[in-house]
Image (cartoon, rainbow, N blue to C red):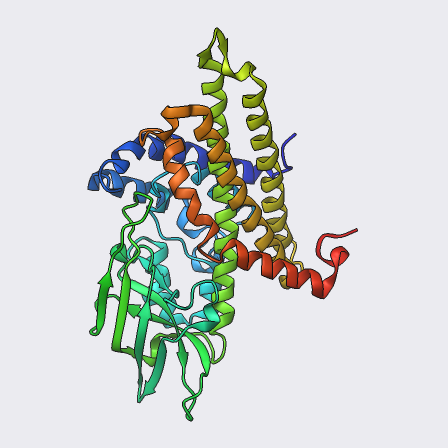
Length: 393
């Protein structure tokens, strides 16, 4: 029995599955053994195909040329794209509904529309050395000087900055007396004077998208590049985090599904002591646990997305989103560990997708809010509302 998706959602699911399986997955090993890079012509073809398939504008409103797809439909798309290693599905930029809510017409014309149509590429400068999951601890400042702001501070893990031409940056605007003030978001062009790359560290995965550290030395940004109304910066950041957590959960489900398919095929073919290892109960237990946990994570993720489509209380959606991200990311890590074990030595080879997933899935328990932060969000919601209000009777 499958989750009851609409016919339209199933069509999008199949579209994304074909793109992942036929266009992206065949190039995984090329990326793995070439620092994450693909030949430029291949990368550009993937980018163009993603554009033509509509993946870049799934969440954009209709009056802006978007598709305004239900969140559940978008989740099933990203679940299929999660079947791919080496971040090859990051070949595109994707605009979000909150951007159109936050930005004025000028900003939409200069940044969001070009991003949706593949003419511009973004990155997010939010995390700092002492402000990771707790983004309220941000110390980067934006000081108003005439018609501009001067940005000073340091940002870590600015994912895909090496491919971007502008960034969304979060900063604090100091009050007149020097105390901490409101959080604000800004558009900052990557070629602005005063932006200094301090480091571009290597990570456990092999992605062409890097995660550099930047220093902002009195970077002058026009006031016209401040996003949203006064005091709304954290609201839009929360919207961004909530969406990213949904899609991490979705991609983790997609990764686990592919891993389980791989393990099942291998277990049926691998013969030890005259029998396929699929006949051995310890292998069967690992497969059974993986299937059960995948199904639970998928149901949780789908239903959380459906809650948003139904327009339920945003605070409850935020809680269910954290539950989905927590469970799906930890589920995928357990699944990949079992699958590597089922493959044995073959599972530790970089040519095996299980080994790549083993490295790549680990970060899903960290970024966009660690598992520990998700537990705090869930527990606080439970303490405030009780069991029935959070998950029903």
